[in-house]
Length: 591
Image (cartoon, rainbow, N blue to C red; front, top):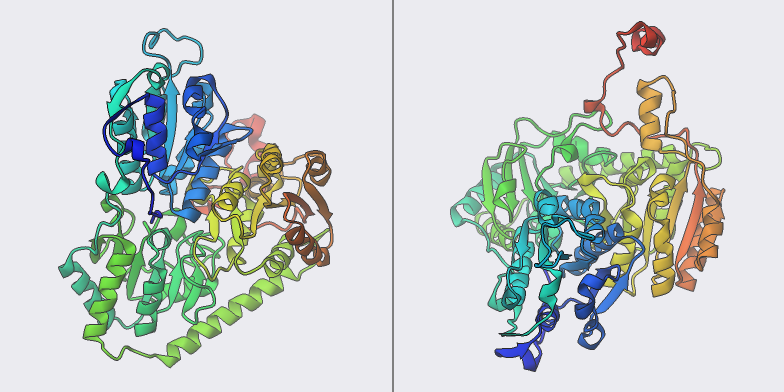
């Protein structure tokens, strides 16, 4: 839910003459945009020149992919749609991966996409690309500016769709349309878009309340939509009213307070066994603000936990997500908070005294205690030099409770899912189901900009660090005091685990040689630390938090202690038919 209270410039409150660049910038001001991420380019320089006077900070990155990851995290923490921009052609196409990630993460974002000038479109001139076609499949909409008089109108459309459909929108403007003169009025956001889709169909909400009231073992799954709508407090009230154990959806560990007696943790890959054993027993599932993604509900730890016979109540702002992956008993299209509020009111009427089940509370406490002990036991096994689980355990113990933590994709980053616990929302910024490496560090930078006073740390493998360490220069230049926790096992460890389990330890392309990341960080002007003992984690974290400067922790962990494969469902033991490759057949080496 984006923050409001924006004042439109007096000069722009009625139709006045302005340049297209001025109209675009005034629309950004109206939308409470404080930062725009990208790399300087001639295509938008006329607009860029206005940013300092308008109070907009242009934040230059070292690679445009980082720009959209930063904007993605900024939005998840602040609620305000991030804005990115780049040079036409390669500058914009460099953002494809990070925009696709934001699209799957349901993050509102506007990509200002300068394109070839109108006199030269179609000539394959310098830095020309059909950017609209490239981005059509990875955005909610592509909006083309067709005339200079439409620049503000089209930008309003981009923001309207980005917020309404929860995802990125491409705003494509030929580079010559930044120049000229037009007459227009700058509108306030409430004049062209709404922020709340309401509390859903009353009949469906009533039916959902009846299902929960009569359920023998209801379970709640709280997701990103609950966080975005600021609805977690109401979900807690529903859970408390009927003593409903509450899990969080995959990689949204901040969607319910971990210290709540009814919290059971995360479902999905490397999540909580307590959550999985609890959900497995459910006869009614209340899923709020989650699309129940296929990957996020796959069996884990050999537990096929998602209940096949349970009646599902799914609440989502996007009708496309209702029953997309699992059949539902009741589907409700609505804002997660407003709908949860109405559902809670219904439950208070029909079950005025609630349902306090002490036996269920004891069961939840026991399951959580057993799982917590298992996590500690796994972490305390020796590693050479450090068991990665031990490093994660020490890291999470050393960081303050209000720390924002971003996680990349990969073996250690995903193992962190079991160890990360949050008692506040907008703390967990994960790469999610697009699964691209190189996300966590630029995302942490964006999160830090959204909350300058909160500590921010990124959990990254050494493979992903190779894709993002260049942004240490950005952190130093802009004085963004993010802590990069690089778990260095000298390998692409998630893929290495596949080669262990399925390819007889034939490590092709999965070993990494790299420089000393701490030394590299220091040469770039950041703090750099090398950690080879678990007991050094806490003192280093304390030192870094006191200094409040960009820091890189090069944490050497055991490359043989690996988590299970990500996709057991998608891998098979190898079969080889040609004689040349027979020795690689599982039937030969697997005997």
